[in-house]
Length: 145
Ligand code: IDP
Ligand code: MG
Image (cartoon, rainbow, N blue to C red):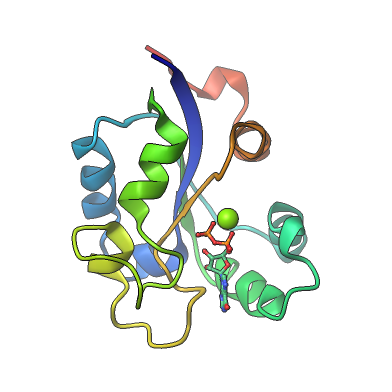
């Protein structure tokens, strides 16, 4: 049994839609525990650093503009297989392909082809989780069980 940490964000569209509580509830329902949380308004250079892996892709500028458009809720989630579990409850990157019952499937169906507005972010692997958690939080801001 592996207890992992992962970085989650309720993106600016979630804050805008007033559904961050619902997002957190979905995460808690699958056994993920919020062990750190804060609202953050990223600067452009911070966003470019956070999404550096996507630099050069066609959606990079759109994504950076969107993620800096308002505050987001950054969280550290902890639990068994937290990285994969979070990815599963988030649903597919493209909300048009996300299944009902997933966060993106239920809260981002209205976004058309504006795929950047898909409500949540989740780390995709242990190494990225470590880096992304460190981007937002110091160890003393994380309240592990
Ligand atoms: P993920 O968030 O499911 O891991 P990634 O491929 O890592 O998906 O992409 C990061 C984010 O970039 C996505 O969550 C989404 O907001 C945005 N994105 C990905 N592909 C596109 C696209 O084709 N158009 C617009 N935004 C995109
Ligand atoms: Mg990703």
